[in-house]
Image 1 (cartoon, helix red, strand yellow):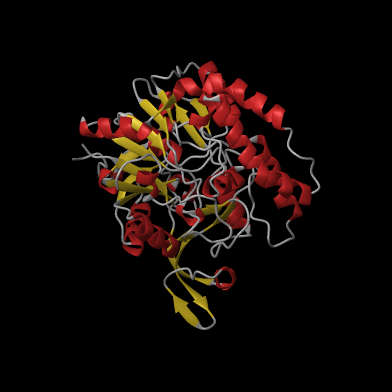
Image 2 (image 1 turned 45 degrees about the vertical axis):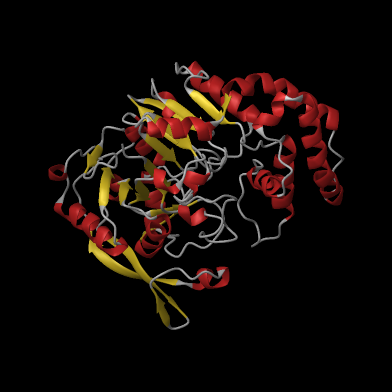
Length: 431
């Protein structure tokens, strides 16, 4: 059976939550393979709103196994609060429906403190726009081989050794920032207390998923953020601290690359970005304000206002290449209803030269000027459309032109936050 990876193909906030939920009804296992609780997914099901940050989107679907993979960094205290919130909304979450990889690194309170201190100390123009939730420092500890991992919670001696190793790094760092040393005993007590809540969900995820795959189960891999925030292929240094592109799906749960059968890229019909960094098509005029208001562009996790701009075909073509996207899901088409004229970025101008991709150097990215192609808009509503015949002719032309420019077909078209308001073109789960 086909296994599908869902990745954001812009700067995040593309509407992955709805699409993952839409696909998860037909999957057997839904896996989070990277990121932390710095990214949020909003699901709207029968008018009921679920906001997820650490939990995979599949938890709201009965009879599915949801998995938090080793590519994630996990704040165990936040996870338990989120589980309590979702349970209060009537969703059953048990060790039979939720599994956490034993080798998942933990986000500790000291990571959040360090994250926020660095951002506050950064001068204007060097701030990353981090959410301050400790994701970056937690990934640093993972690479530095000083993480406390889920499995470490099961043994007191091991846990103490892992904490001591971490503090050998963090205490000198904190001293340089003017912070007091970490209260070792208090941190240990916190970890010992949370262990009883986390360990029931712990499992050798790599083994379970390999068995599921051999049994012919459908696996849906759910990414967080967007490919333009990838630590290697994003707009560095204004990126997240993990690999976001589709190749991470295999590494982030313990499967080989052959487990990936189809990559679905989620793309807004326009472009948004939260936080700092280059944004060639950003609009700071009435059109940008209109996109933000109509699209309700505020971050699920932070509530921060998103920057808005015209669709950037160059960037999406680039992310489709780096993630090996087979088809895209185009979301929020209805936000463009009523615009007399629409613009699509088809290239950039930099120092008198034309580029068909975004240069790698941050300084050059900041100076790129978009080259636009204009298309007529449409006055009729596309909201809630569930078939091509429900769409205005100009809307169809806009979608077809995007396909041509990004060199990738549209597999799904989303016309509202409701999961059923979706036009299926190609089934990602088709054998």
